[in-house]
Image (cartoon, rainbow, N blue to C red; front, side, top):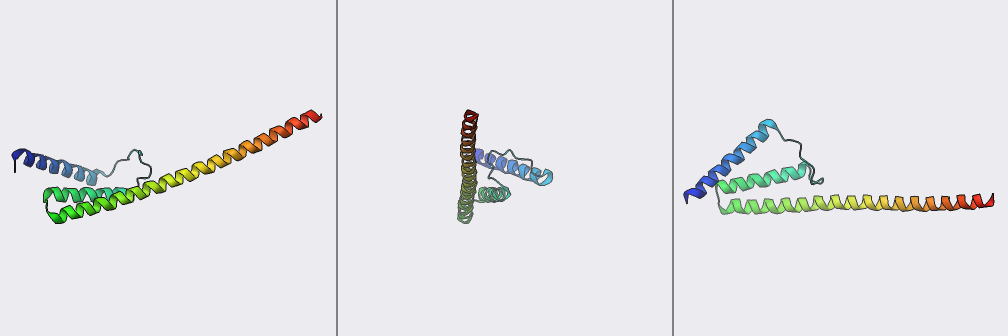
Length: 122
């Protein structure tokens, strides 16, 4: 194995071990919510996927490659389903708000027309 790849692999391991030990000792920091559907369960899937990748990088053999592929597949399916659920809920909320707005507009228009007719009678 070339020296450059060996050094990169060693540096990657050191970097990941530093991140892991910092996470264990300091705990997780508050994540920015760029993806509101991403919850603790998704974080668990993501961590499992990262661990499988690290195991594969440390000892690349076929069983670890298969494990990594399976975990990636499961994680992606989970993420996709969570995102679908979130978007479906958002759409339902928007539809409900839209119906309420239309209803308010109709009621407001009927009240306005009633006021005008009652003013004209006076």
